[in-house]
Amino acid sequence: MKDRFVIFGWGLTSFGIFFSAFCYFIIYSIPLTALGLGCIIIGLTISLIPPHPIPNKVVKTILIGSIASIEAILEEFNANQEALYLPPQEGKIYAYIPLTANPKIPAIAQIQRAPKRVITYVDGNPGLIIYPPGSDLITLSRLNIESGGSLSDIEGILSDILIDFTELVSKVNVTVKNNEVTIQLKEIKVDVKAPRFTRILGSLPFSIAACVIVALTRKPVKVTDEQKKGKTVTATLLVIE
Amino acid sequence: MERHLLFVIILAIIIFVSLAGLAAIGEGRLDVYLSVFTIEYLAMREILRIRTRGFSFAGLDPVALGLCVIFGFIVLKKVIEILR
Image 1 (cartoon, each protein chain N blue to C red):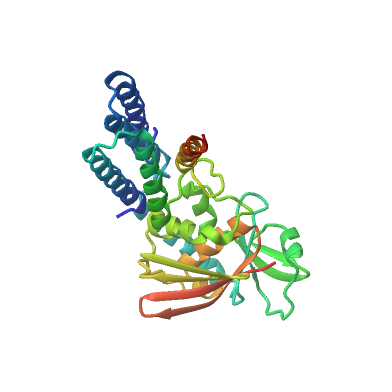
Image 2: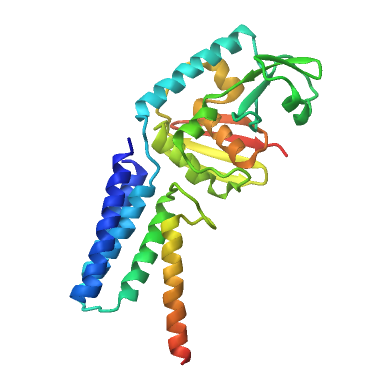
């Protein structure tokens, strides 16, 4: 079934078209014609608004459940290294977590060539392949995220996902400097007890933000330097060229 | 409140207030109404950072694009009028 907002939007648009045509050609009233045009603008705007077919609370619950599963996997394998978010090869964004502390970071192409299994080997070193919750969230949000796009609109996209779609935070501020994206989140509304997940993949909103940036840039991303000051949490996401 | 809903409500209020204002001062040119609606829509869209579904061109959604094209025609018409 189509979203009721979309139906209402198209209804208002149709009314606006007939009303403005009637007023312009029959009544010869410009203000009433303009009223019809106003209805067309508002109707089209309503019909183009991204629908929210899944209630925010359901989305939040699914995310928390997903984190619990990932946390259990990370605990089981005693993972400690920071995750690297990678662009999708088979439709989904994934994260590579090295299981051994290796001072030499393997080449991105090597990681991408590695088989997509829970435990995979890159250059002889074991690592975990995890599908973070944010990878499906982008598809679920039905946002028109153009791959290969610029980071100029990242704040708008993150606001859509983190404020409107998931209701995880109340405010998003983004600063882009070269390949560093500094994200400041205010009033995080979800308290997930997943210390290893937070340490490795970043806290939930930043993990989602990393997935959005990967989807947008098609480049690997790393969440670094997450800091909490009162109700504000700041993190720097590194886009790896 | 959800940002998109807020955008629609504020846009509706602004459009109808400006419409009533222009009608009250006896404005009879349709292009004036359209120009005002275009400016209001684009300004609100930028202030609330709204993203919509469907295609986008140069960062503009279909409604903004349509309004910009109409606005362009209005400006072009005026320029031609002045040059004549």
